[in-house]
Length: 340
Image 1 (cartoon, one colour):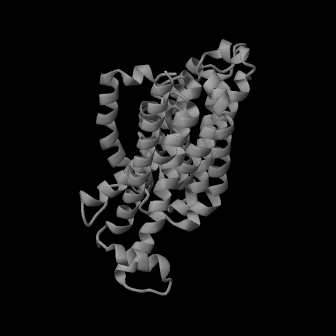
Image 2 (cartoon, helix red, strand yellow):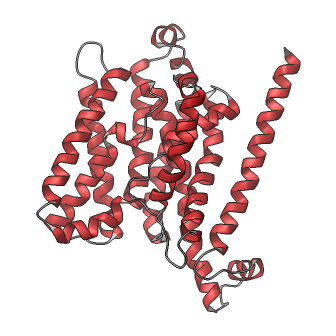
Image 3 (cartoon, rainbow, N blue to C red):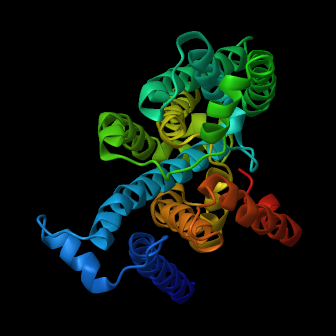
């Protein structure tokens, strides 16, 4: 038994190290690949010599924020997806189930129609507030009744609230062609317009979300055993769910406000992480920190390669990559085994 556990730990460590090496390689590809390919020497020069000039070096400096944003969003969305699947005990949970994507989309559309906002730097905070409101409404509806919030009520509330926000969004968009043309670029989900000036104000939100996720680890491991057993172990079910929900909202809302709704990262990565490291939420969160950016940045690189010199936005590529992967997981029965 001890020998088997040792082999399992060694296998997990090897897979995580391999994922880390792949992530570094993908990040280098993200900086090097684009409409103008650049060499490793040029990358090193751009990073070490601030006064260096040239078109290639300028391209590198534009791609670095894009790569950093891809890593940041990959970590956030993978962690949020793991939290949502743990809280709702739904292996299909993603930001949509929180009402977050629909709330953010509705807020962005309303801000465009009412105030004429057109650039991401203008409506990033609107999307953040809208996503937070959507998730808060889902939690409030799911908490009604004597039993308080539970996985089924939260899932149903997310579906109802999401439909409501989507209907409002459609009602505003249909008569406003000018709003549709601006909104469609945000709604597809992409990181091509990444700027450090947009990321920096939201870093505290990402930080608080990750800290809350780490705090919730023991409670979520207990919650996976069932509500009654978790209570017997001394845990507060309501507090665990509320903190986990808050962490997921902060991570997803900040991500959605920066890049639009990017699907499949929060859905697939937790399943793959469980396949690699097992059901321990502490290990799942650690694996997601590597696998989430690996998927997102890798999808962004693929989007640049398939349509040079133009880009296919990462939200489209993750859907194309994610759909067959998730179907394969379902067909293998792994999604059923990894449900919480």
